[in-house]
Length: 91
Image (cartoon, rainbow, N blue to C red):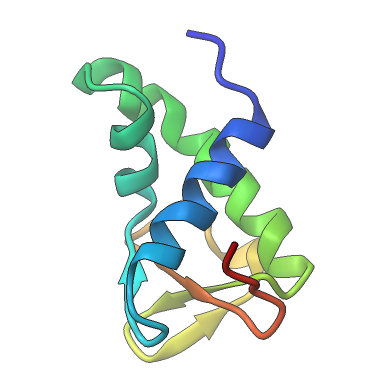
C-alpha cells in the first residue's frame, strides 16, 4: 500500500466538503475510503492522524473529542473527530 499524504488530504477535504459545515468525520472514514481491506485501512490510520494534525496546525481542520478541540499533539490515542477549521475552503 502506497498512499501519500496528498491523497489522504484530498480525501479528507472531500469528505468534509460533502457534509454540512457543522458535521464531522472520523479519521477511519478517510482510511476506509482509500482502502477497503480492514487490515490495510487500520495500518493507514497513523498516517491519517498525522495528516489531520498537520492540517489542524494550519487551521484547515479542527480535531475534536466530544465538545473539546484538541491540539495536534493530543491525538496520539483515543477517539477523535475531524471538523472544518476556520481555514477550510470547500472546492
